[in-house]
Image 1: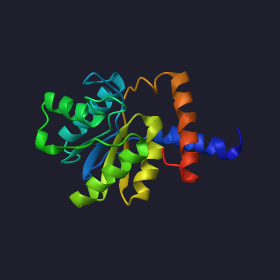
Image 2: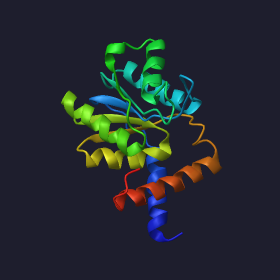
Image 3: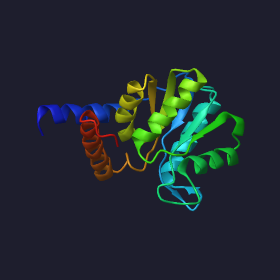
Image 4: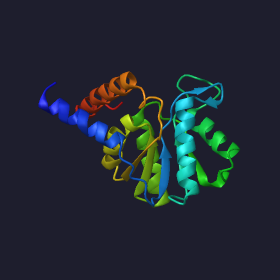
Length: 182
């Protein structure tokens, strides 16, 4: 692996294990799969972590993200919202971005919501491998994002998956810098 690639890999891995949660305008939960109206285990872990951060008073709002992914009846954001309400969160404190089919589209839409709220900061909640790219994208939209990786992520705890997802993030970041928005 060349020096530049090793440096990017190390930057992604460093971000994946850095907890930056602090008071912010909102908590943005990056979507993951949903199954017939229920969050996947990966998405549920993200939602649980965001709910815990909100309950600790880090932000007044949670923004759930994610479109339908081809599913006609449900969106990731809608499923996330419903799950948080079931867990006891005030529905008036949840905003949903239901159109993003890619990380870029979700971050772009969430940034628009944050700007409408008049806030310039957020806590980005996702699996650790994802946070370096997410923070890069938020910065491009004028939002300071603080990463908060999901504790005990099933992806991060598996060495093979952790490596594969990190390599995928390296490719996605390369595409980002080439102007291809994924």
